[in-house]
Image 1 (tube, rainbow, N blue to C red):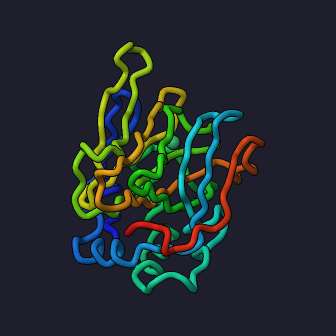
Image 2: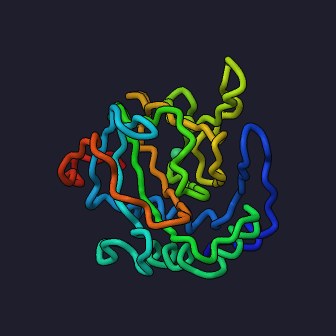
Length: 232
Ligand SMILES: [Fe+2]
């Protein structure tokens, strides 16, 4: 379903760190099906106020556990979601990303998570550069229409400036950003406020240069959130 050729032929911007942006990587109808069938099972709220590379509050669920070659809780996923997972696990996707970022992913592990920032949930991610075992991040958004006044903007920071927001990315189903990890790749996500009529839903695809270690102490986590408590 994904247009791997667009990724393969993509180019990276260098400021404030290496990023790319793609449009219509997946056709509109398929994106709409994925949005409507976005999972609601097995979401857990995680919060870190200290003790590692960033502070955050996030509500997440695995889609692909790093190192595994199938979907997490695949019995809960629709056919279209399973096809999306197959694309993400394919050699074509890995090779296209490898070409884009100019780094070998031959021995990399792919891990994919779903994150939902429900309106008024207080979910956010403070500025951080990403842990050194991340190579790259690729995002897809599953939102109908997003008004920047609702919050939830992804910001790229220029740490060499005082007014450090270099670029703002507003969630959109048509648009799909890639971030290449470096010591300069500072980014953050602001909270989604009560004005938002829908949850800010994301697919977060990461290539790792090693199996990611267990989270360091200091991370708080809820139990599994009942799906009726989540906003569509
Ligand atoms: Fe990050």
